[in-house]
Length: 406
Ligand code: SF4
Image (cartoon, rainbow, N blue to C red; front, side):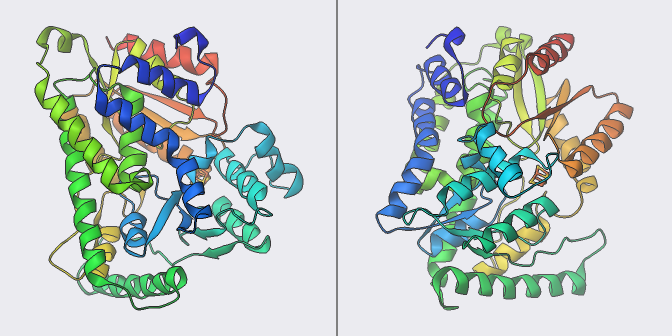
């Protein structure tokens, strides 16, 4: 496929596959990504359990727990890329969501609505009480439409919560996890050994992804920005519903990266960038970065902590929740972002959020001010969640920003 023929998100993946035809691992990864949603839906129709959840970030905890309960994590965000403005309009017109509600929530509501009368569709949603207000509204709405929704209580760990207070939080969340297990499987009993193995698998995947990101520093153009963010944010979060295949492909990717020579001359031309935000559904943004000579080498979601393996597995999940880089308010992310900027020797950062997300727009402004004072250039982008290419204005801004840093 030629770049001129690219019209939508799927085309970008196919085009990207063509660009990476030298790599078996990347081609396979993109096949796994493209087939993730149909695979989950088919598996569910054939009798496997699947549950919608937020497994769309490598540092989420749902995948090990659900896989240990023989359930496929169905990442809600992945149905967003099947949506267009008509799906969003269901949320606005049928459910009367205010027009300014974030497009992610409206897309999901529209997608769930389409499935609500389909007897073969996945109808169970695992949320978290600490989700934003629009998301809570979506879950409540879907409950009224007959979906089975479960929201464990997740409390933010504020700064200074250590010692006994932290232990109490851990105990509280373990109780929530027992309730979740009961909701998923009908019993509080679970196979502890199986969960331990899933936690070990998750740790292996986090370490292997970390290795991929390290190897990319010297071979930045081998995997371009789009496949990298999809493998990191989606693959390591939900394993594309095929854990063994995903891990084997990650191993192959490491092997390929280790065996290609480093091109020092080419590396001098690279503009290393840090991506701070969720995965943009407008895949053209990544292409614009690449075309301007940039490379997304650092991410807000780069894994930097593993699950503990020295405690019982449920405890390990609870510790991970309260101790990873996403724990607490966004302000605590700064230290991690500082480290990530240093790790990749970044020349700039791209702050990205979804249109209509008031929470994230505040965070982005805070980050922008903080890093601006430290002399780190940044660009603040907002994108839509539904299908459709990025606007020309966004692409021009991304290209101009990247070229400015060269
Ligand atoms: S993008 Fe913002 S408003 Fe939308 S679901 Fe996420 S946190 Fe909520």
